[in-house]
Length: 215
Image 1 (cartoon, helix red, strand yellow):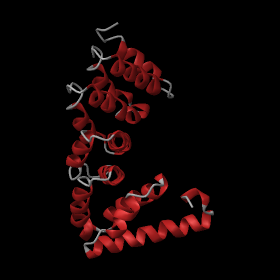
Image 2 (cartoon, rainbow, N blue to C red; image 1 turned 90 degrees about the vertical axis):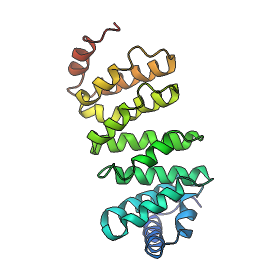
Image 3 (cartoon, rainbow, N blue to C red; image 1 turned 30 degrees about the vertical axis):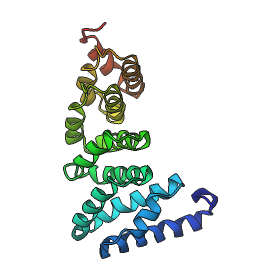
Image 4 (cartoon, rainbow, N blue to C red; image 1 turned 180 degrees about the vertical axis):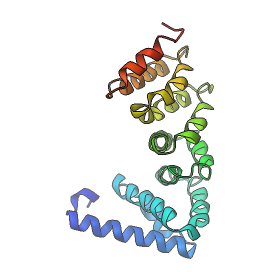
């Protein structure tokens, strides 16, 4: 039975049980429960697991090193679902402390599996909204990477910050105006559209585009 086949009450009980099991694992230096939930076929079970890791890290300063050590192991696991969960958990932490998980984002960015790379993109979105300075600095490093998919995912990843603060990401998007890959250019146009339609953003985007060399 999948997560959303359960009643609201049963879902709440399951979330609590997963949280307690993961907390117990971390406290004891074990990972049986973590591996079980991080590799689950149900997306929402994996989401519950990475949200639990993020909450435990934030609430328990004494367990933070253990959590980071475990994430370092998980990102090297042979199961892509576990690596995906590790990236998403790191993204929860990166919303308030990016420095300690930056290496996990970098590892995930070059993962062979698209679901792990997509987790990096999603994490950049949520981290960039809450903790923009270090995240955008990280993103800027890859705007001209030789791999077109890296450039595209970074472009897409910074979108969410731009929906409220377009001025923060327009200088980065500008660097992609001459990109030679159609797929990257299409993503650039998509992101510009996504931030331009938000209230108060259209004028800012248009004013900036008028300064771009690629008319």
